[in-house]
Image 1 (cartoon, rainbow, N blue to C red):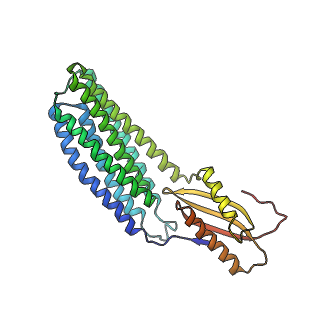
Image 2 (tube, one colour):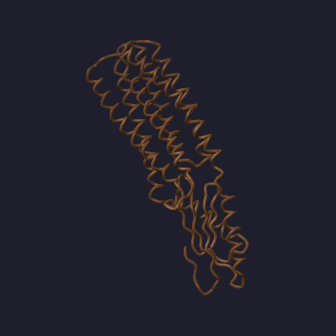
Length: 306
């Protein structure tokens, strides 16, 4: 049997994750001050809602930092498979925070529409929303790149949150722009605030679904498993691939394989085949971070199983 665990060389890469998260924190603070100040002064529900979305982003930035630090903790006796699922728990918390924020914003937007209160017409509203779109989209792209490189669900969730904030700012921008075109469109501010809440809910539900998938050890998609199975079966020395199982783990995949080898091989030779197979799979499929290979003698009379 062979188990190949990756060396603990990801700390340097995780510092990139922490760095982009701190950049997000500073940007969030500046955007919150700008949008909340302008929104309150101009009595814009859409911009205040957008500021609240940025405030929830600030919370998720700190959750991301905690998830990154705890999730990369080394193996110990109580956690022999590592702490990667802490990141999934952190991502789940991010999703719950998003939905909670969305409910509050939706209630406030409905109350604003019922009260028929119009915001002041000011170009500062458009300027604040436009700046938010630019900054948040840049943060979403930068965070997403780091998340893909690290395979970090927490960073991926935070990138999705940045993107939803950018989209909510687009809604605010359009609603405020419509109102500035003509004062009779005062309802557009409240409608834009409701749209912001909708974007937040959608983002939160997606994050909860994806983090929940990893927490309950959902198997990877059939097409990917078939591709790995065909690759493993073609490796020199593998007579039969009897079984392949996989599970998601913090946006990466852990595999268990049972293979049959020539019964005349020594234990050492069988072990070398298993080691080579494990290394080849991890090189060919970057999403695979751990491969457990169990070797058995090839007995032609026994049918293979999946």
